[in-house]
View 1 (cartoon, one colour):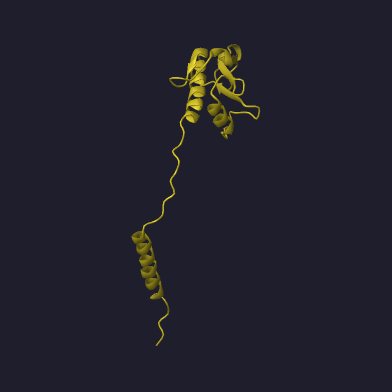
View 2 (view 1 turned 180 degrees about the horizontal axis):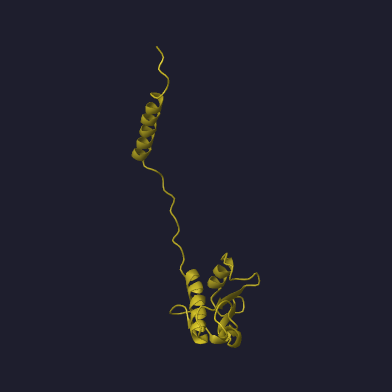
Length: 137
């Protein structure tokens, strides 16, 4: 069970984890041992609340396929257990990122004094630039 927040958790049966061979350097060990982890999580078939599902599907994240499946590959460590923990942690962070709703922005107007200051500054700056012109006798 992957705990997201106090009331939301992902059951282990919804997360598909498979061990694969890691890429890159590692000597002979990399060819023999399947230490990398390939995690798949189907958003649509999950027991997450609908709000979470909509926000996850709305994300423009390369880890989420068009079918709504989160695919995470973890191969940083030599140990399969550490890679599994890291993949689960990355999934947890992804789901937690959509759990927080943003505050709605209140549109504001500039104050009269700030408008006046801006126009005064423009006038002064224009006068300075005017003085840079050619001198005519």
